[in-house]
Length: 122
Image: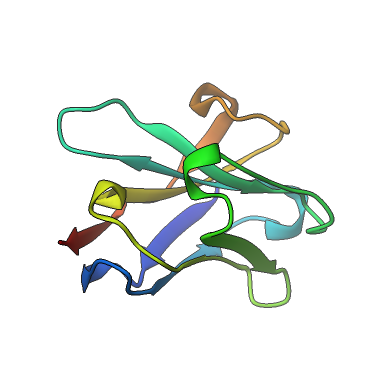
């Protein structure tokens, strides 16, 4: 059983940056594909970024490409999401997730954090 705890969310002005962290415990972090999802008010949860177990492959949804960077440190059992050039439409609760499949769909991720709120003001 893997426990995931996100941190780093907050309120930022448009154009600003935030770095989210997701610390894992209770499992073998390096064996999991890790991903970030987000859910805006009134909308379904959507994929944002994913990274392979070794970090050698990364994938982003189109709306965050060139602005967000996902990375992981297997020695620290942590995955990160560096978010730059933030826009009001990035406002959402951000969740990290761990799974065994290289997938964008949330149903393939077995473990989820509680989420961290990111609010971008215009």
